[in-house]
Image (cartoon, rainbow, N blue to C red; front, top):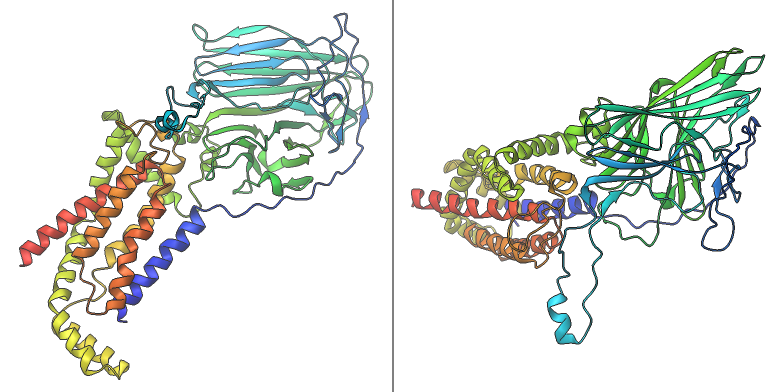
Length: 569
C-alpha cells in the first residue's frame, strides 16, 4: 500500500477511536457501599413550639423515612418536633417551594423548560394499529424539576454544624417570615427569612434574597451566640439528592455531583462514588447536575472551603460545602454567606455568574476552545434567524468558506494525482518485488510533477477537530434542546427519528468517495469504500443538528470538487 492508503487507514482508526473516547460511555461498575460513623459537636434541642406537632410521612416500605445525619451515616429518624408549612417563591423564571422543616428546599421548577415536547409521538405508533397493540401513553409535558428526594429525607440546603461547639439538628423546624413571595411583577428583589432559637445557646437565621430576573439567589446564615462563653462553629451546607436507578437517562449526559475544585472539574459517577470523601480547599462551586440543568452552591471564601461528598444506600447522594470554623464571642453573631444558582446550563447565563460556572457544560478540556466559539457564533446567527436548523446551515456555509482555499488546493492535488495513476501503475508493476525502490521512484515522480501525495487528505485532517468541537457544541448546548427545524425534525439535540438525514449523508459520502481517486491499489479502494458505511452507522444516533451540518458540508464539497475538476479538465 502507498502512503495515501496508510493515511486512509490511520484516519479511519482515528475517527473510530475518537468516537469511543469522546462519545461512547464506558461500562459502569457498582461500587461497594461503606458506612462511616463520626460523632462531632453537642446536639442541642430547639425551643419548644406552641404550634401543632408535625411528623413527616413514612417511606413507602412502611418504615420511618430516612434522615441523613451530618456524621455520614444513614439513620431512620423522624424530624425534630415542630410545625411544618410550605413557603412559595415565584418569579418569571421559576417556582420554588421551601419548607420550615430545616428551612430547606422542597421543589424548584423551571417555568421555561419542559420535560418533553408537546405532541411528541413514538416512531412506531403508526404501526401499532396494524400490529394489534395499544398505542403508548405519553405523559404530558411538565416544568423541569431540579429537586429529587424521597419523602421524609432531608432536603437540599440542609444546614448542619459538624465539628462545632454546638450542632444544630438538620431537620429542626424554623419559623418563616412569609408564606408567599411573588416576584412575577413589580419588585425586583425580595427577602425570605427563617428563624430558630435555641434558648441559652444560639439563634440561627437563614436569609434568602431572590432577584426577579435571575436564576441565582443569595443565602446568608447568621448564627448568634447566646452563651456566656466563646463557641466555634463551621457550617456544612448540603444539596441532598435521590438518584432514581430506574429513571431514563441520556447516554451522553451525567446525573450526579459536579464541582469545580482547584481549577479542575470533577463529576463522579454515582455508582462509583466513595461513601465519604472530602476534597479541597479552593472550592469554586459544587452541586448536582443533569445534562442540561444544574443546581449549585457557591461559597463566599473558596480558598477556605472544602467539598464533602457522601454516598448513602438507596442511591441518596449529598454534596456539601464545608466552610472554615468561625470563632463567635459571647453575645456576638457570625455570618456564613453563599450564592445559589439553579437553572439551565446556558453558556452566557453561567458565564455571567463570574465563578467559572460555565465549565459545568461538558465541552471537554481541549475541545472547548473550538466548541465555545462555534456555539457563540451559532447563537449570534440565531438572533437574526429564529431557527437553529437554519442557523446550523449558515454556520456550515461559514465554516466551508473558511476552508474553501484549502479545499481548492486539495481537489487540485487529487486531480493531479489522478493524472499520474497510469504512471504509478507502471511503477508498481516494474518494482513489484522491490518496495524500497518503488517508494523512491514514486516520490521522484511526485516531485517531477510538483504533486503532494498528502495534499488531498489535508482538509479531512483539519476538519476532524472541527467536527468533534461542533459535536460537543451541538450535543451539550441547551439552546438546541427541543429546538425544531422543520417537518419530522422537532428536536435538533436528538437523533433523526426516521434516520433520513444520516442515510442521505451516507449517500453523499459515497458520491464523494467515487469522485476521489484511490489509485490502482485495489486494497486501498476497498478500505475507502467502507468509510461511508462506517460514518453512516456512527451518525445514526448522533444529534440531528450535527448530521445536518455534515450532510450540507458534503453537498458543498461535492459541488466544489465538480467545479475544480471542470476547471482543470
